[in-house]
Length: 351
View 1: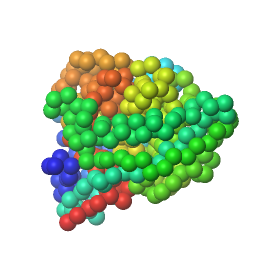
View 2: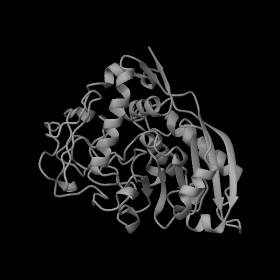
View 3: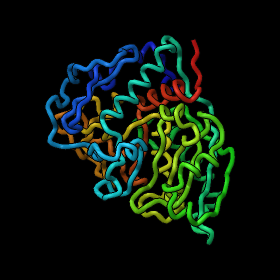
């Protein structure tokens, strides 16, 4: 299909969201005006270039969620929360500087592939690690695990999309293995032991999706590493989701499996749709409208950046909307996932 491949010739030199090819950073996170990066623009300029037409050029009175400069390490994990306004959301968003660094790494990695056609894999092997309590809490069944993988497959095929809103990303998912560990300490406080857990259990290389299901603190639905993180910490690569968010789980409004869909989007290189708020370059995708803050529930018709084109992408899988509200990825997101796959996860690049 035409929307399942892209060429680096089309990507190199094209600034995300039509913005400038320069970027800058500063100490005041909420006063930043970050623009796009091209792959061959190294070193990164320190002078800010022009901002995309129509995007905010002056400091915005609204900060993106989690834009406080503290707790940088926690923000390095891309997350999904049940309530964007709750404490669980604090310190878990990627800062504008971090997003720009990831973008810089992507564009640099794509330089040697210029002129090649990029394609997603036919299937992504999935290994699910079930971390449960010794009394059986959190021990999700094989049936629900397969249902979760089926949800991923359907979401990335575009089967939840309404009308012409979505696209078939070309990514397919196939369950390769399931491991089970009953450990009260691991289950009650996964984040405390997560480095050890993932180092012991992770399977495969950068192309293998490792999913860990466990208990997470209130409000936190899941989180993921990013493709650019793999070279430095390969043993930590993967996705963590609350066990009750799998299809048929007990998490009200979030039990149809789309926390998995959302986190795998991060694992494939996507930012939240509300990344950078109303400021250029947003989430570095041309066809997702700017969004000042995460959506809660399903506020269709919301327009939190009224001076910019389009209503908020509240039904996009990379938002914080309820599972029943989420329906699709865009063609721009598809292109970006393919770029990350080829650049960092050993994907196919053909002349």
